[in-house]
Amino acid sequence: MAGLMIGLLVAALDNSIIGTAMPKIISNLHGMEYYVWPFTAYILSSTIAIILFGKLSDIYGRKHILLVGIVVFVIASVMCGFASNMFELILFRTIQGIGGGILISLPFIVVGEIFGNRDTAKYMGLLSAVFGFANVLGPILGGVITDTLG
View 1: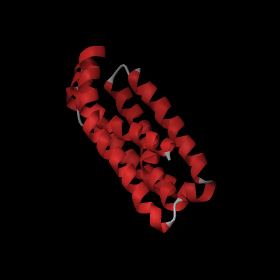
View 2: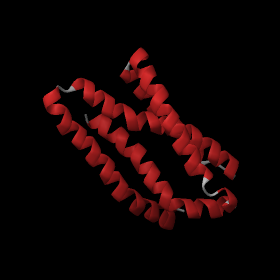
View 3: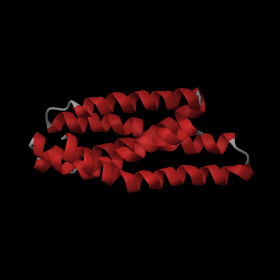
C-alpha cells in the first residue's frame, strides 16, 4: 500500500508543482506563445494512458504495467529537466503524461482488487487523501523549487 501511495503522490505532485513552476520554465525556454501546450499534452496523453494501460493491465498484470509506468514517468521527468526548447518540453511532457496516467489510475485498480469489499473504501480514502495532500503541497514545493533552485 505504501508503494502505491508513493507512486500516486509523485504523479499528483508533478501536476501541481508544474502549475506553479511553469511561468519560470516558459521564460527560460522563451516560449510564451506555447504556454498551454505542456499542460495540454500531459493531460491528453495521461487520459489516453488511463484507458489503454488499464486494459493492458488486465491482460499483462497490474505489477508489470505499474513498473512500466514508474520507468516511463521517471525517464520522461529527467528528459523534461534537460529540455532545451519548448518543442522538447512538450514532447517530453507528452511521454511523462503516459507514465503519470498509469501511476494515477493503477493504484485505485489495485486497491479495488486486493482488499475486500469491507476495506476497499478505507484504502480508497487513503489514496484520495494522498491526492489531496499532493494538491496542497505541490504549489508550495513548486514555488520553493523555482525560487531557490531555479
